[in-house]
Image 1: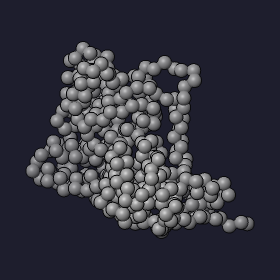
Image 2: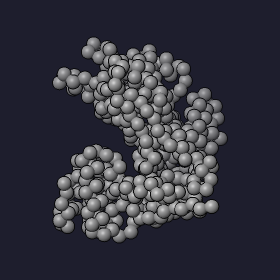
Image 3: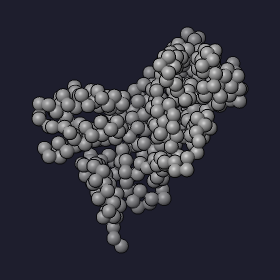
Image 4: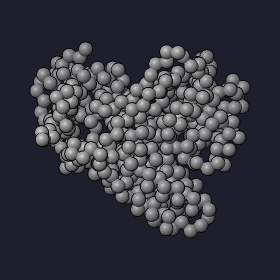
Length: 406
């Protein structure tokens, strides 16, 4: 019997992955390899039926057309919704609260430009989704504009409240891609074209490393929420740790000062975001705690379990984030290879392709030698989808070393 062969390399180029498959290599590991990555790859090769991440994420959907206004205050939820909407073929404009949604709608209308549909979060600062919808419906220009509620509340009365306000439909967070697509197809009311183009989400060649066999994360569940985009999912996990690491301190303070409205908002936000990243145990504990507080019963035990689950998840995400920092330290590239990767990065940036982050990871250490500050700024710009800004920074880095860009 021929033994399984796994390639270990510092170069994670798409061409190399393709060549490895063509010669029937069984696995592929990017150096430096962590123990968990090595273990995961060996299990996939020797016992493919045991791995929970061997399922290919692929879907085929008819392309939708239209311009969507997304009103959502949480950065992680914004990124999840944006990824799905763009994968459906839709244009997306994002605002952080109900007041911004109203101003954007009215400003666009004054220029004779109109959105085809609004996705409206319910709980937002400055002005919530209910108040914003009431204001929008008071203007006859928007009486027929489809407004879809998005909320982590799944109760029947919550849906009834949304519809009574003037919203047309109600979607529960974490967003299910198939449900979102179905609702959008209905309310965008587009004619069925005979030769409709197809969207295929196929991320089989994306080798971004994710937590292996996590006790606190359902990775496949989280990947489904972002259409199988491993790079984006990896970013969301790190964003969750960065953005929410102090939430328990804020929650305990609000409970101690009897600011239950603030407490409920923190729990509600964590419930929705936890679902989007696959932290289903934390999501369930948030539901239990929210229910206990709302029913005026003693919630001491539920709070204790919620905090315990939160801290366990954050400890795992901290380790994952730290491992990602070390895993980007790649072998020194030759001048020819470095130039090739820089030009590939530039091309992806001009195309607005989020896979630019994967290429940046390969040359990050080399760029840091040239300018550590600019290298970090470049990474932040790409992570925030500020591609024009990223192009300018890359040009600044390349100018002293005379690397010409297309």
